[in-house]
Length: 265
Image (cartoon, rainbow, N blue to C red; front, side, top):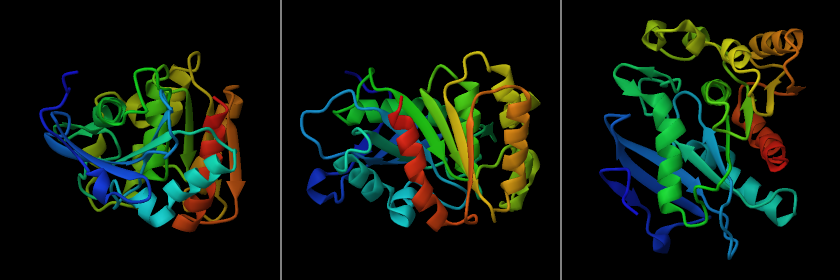
């Protein structure tokens, strides 16, 4: 099968550890290269495994979900306990623009297409236990939660379920975290900047949706507002609040909720 990418580099299994593989591809969407850290469960004779795209927040990159939250250890333990079926977890960089790309298209790069198209294609090309039959799921934290909720709502037929943790809900909250001018994130159509607007636009085809936030999180009121508006518009979803703030200990614990949710579908 001919690759969709000009160049692809993938880690040598001889030097990999803890079931993590690393892929770097060159893509026009980024005007260069992008990195993906991939958790591949060590089960034998499995195929067509689901692919969970897991998006990071500001300041981070492809490595951060694994090496600040140990998501690969969490997922494997849940599989071994029979809590979830085997699934591949693809953890891409956001494209490394500024403090965070917000997974939007801007500044002549298509960070949105990088996630929705390139990451999935790269995993399917290089990870043998996945295929065109692999079901797709998307989740993330903070800016990555914004990416997951927004992209899941914008492309409702692409993903089987959507989950967000401590999520930004509109690009106008990016200023809380980044030094770059927020106008960089402006979209030609403002509906593409707002999670609620995209959910309402595609409500007839929306996949199962959940999101959560810590009670001491600086984004808690934005998440509560989104929940209230979804209820007002009779959009089926699950919203939970837990103890905690905008911090890795919270995401390390509650990524389990995303994996359990995806396992239902």
